[in-house]
Image 1 (spheres, rainbow, N blue to C red):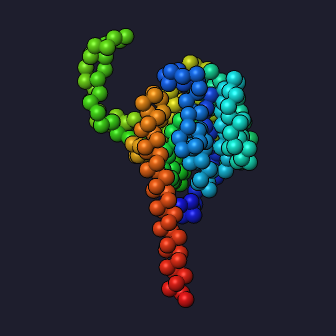
Image 2 (cartoon, helix red, strand yellow):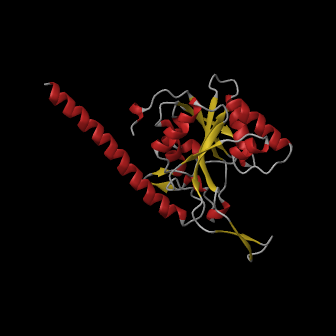
Image 3 (cartoon, rainbow, N blue to C red):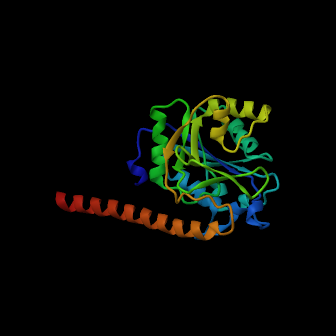
Length: 259
């Protein structure tokens, strides 16, 4: 799907929390600055949002000690803004929300800085829910593997968890800006267990929509994830090229038919 085929969506502000330090990657370099195809993961994540015409702006939230982002070419993009985040994800997203709280844009979309393989089809499906919900939703995939719960603090199985109605939460996640601000404020104030933006809405009694997404929208968390993300990204680039080539071919054929 090309950006020219996407219509009738409201303007949206993208938010990329990129203030993490990536302890699980076992490296001094934050994982959002790992390279795939000559660009960092965070650059690919930004590009996947800016490719869509409904994304008016992307606010990137970086750590106060970040010394890498300002050196990237994307930092000079007129549609990219930079703010300083907090020590946890919820604080970083709140910093971005405070930055855009006076904007005329009502919807915000939050995407992980270390998900470089977002397909435009998934993004379009997620954005389309703004036509019929005043809450929001997120990309997700149904759990396919057998799920085990361990005894507290151990690696011994307690029981098998039924996987029916269980989903893996992905990003992007899209919500009404003011609603998300209010829910995050309450969650932070009451020290709720918030692992993503949807959990803040759940804590306040709202039920976001689950939008089935692609399983190759991988989050780079562990060292072995990088090779898999590189493979998926190469497949994504091929699909974009094929789509653009098909569009050009259709145009050429239509011109030849006219003449």
